[in-house]
Length: 467
Image (cartoon, rainbow, N blue to C red; front, side, top):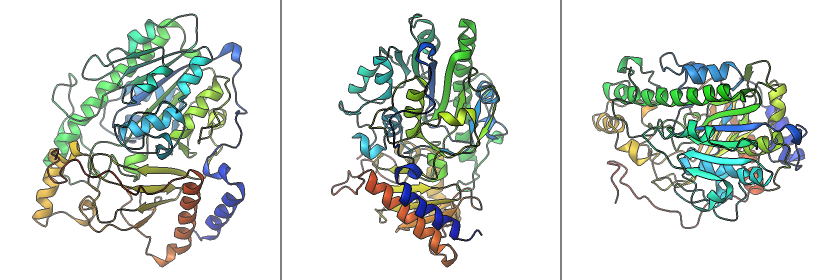
């Protein structure tokens, strides 16, 4: 184990530099601003409930994602990208505003983005960009003012209107397209793709039981990932056909982890770590991998900087534009995430460095129940049966344990699945103190607090049925 001295030095430096090391911006404009006379186009692909490593380019051996893999091979693959929340609408509102969920006024699932929030597509629109959203919306009615067009899903994938949106745009302006899928969100049905995956293709993480129920659901989840991949390929082909791929910045990410127990809604890596791919042939001439920590709040300032626009003073992230030219650089020492109401009462906060993950649970009397649709799924129902039969091993009981540990600390280099909580291990005492204080400082800077009257459960935690 590394000694604690480097971590203590990092923390002391973070206190001295304040917002810089925590990833909060200290200036409005990025050094990497674009020339306004030749501004790039932007396409942002948003997958719905895609786990960070459930793509071929992130090492999955069986999921068929040739188009997304090709995208990764032509640009940068970010290995340490994290969301600010593992919940659909709070993540989207956070990305749109470059702010943490508790600062957007839309921290809970289904809360609309308030009218007073500044969304970066609106800034681009004011600067002359054509802005359009196609597919899943989930941002509320007020956010539509930031777009010239908001096009609803026209099929089960949510991606069916993507190519037409690209074709029908005005040709005399640069554009920003927010292309949001419904794939691979639950519920799952056979027939999503012509050549479906099989249960034998499933790679079951150790926190889920390797049983037929889990494998069946994972195979159907894989099918929707492949369906999404096909639509991504169609958009990329259309960029080539229009001759505009060279100066189009393409970003691909997911709004949260996969919709299985101990993934979506959690602040473990399985919930908030995201695939993040960027392709921009004009600027990224050498494809590669970037290991720098980046956060979802960094997307808004990055795109504004590359468009040649000043960053909004409301942004709480920092541009990662300089990583496109030099992926070996580092823009932040820590990333932060939160879990608020999503079907069930919750309040968890997380800070992560390259080596350590620290979690603080406020409602220790409540179990880590997954979203209600996952509770209703056959994997979780099988886990309940195995728990009642005494057949569920410790690493698979996390969704049921009460009381929970108020503090969790994981050495992610040794424990990539975040299964061994070392918060009570004396060998990690100083690392624990550092991470505590970093989280406290972030909470202070972002005015975070525990709600006096948190929203309660709206679904049963055993059946997933609404009250």
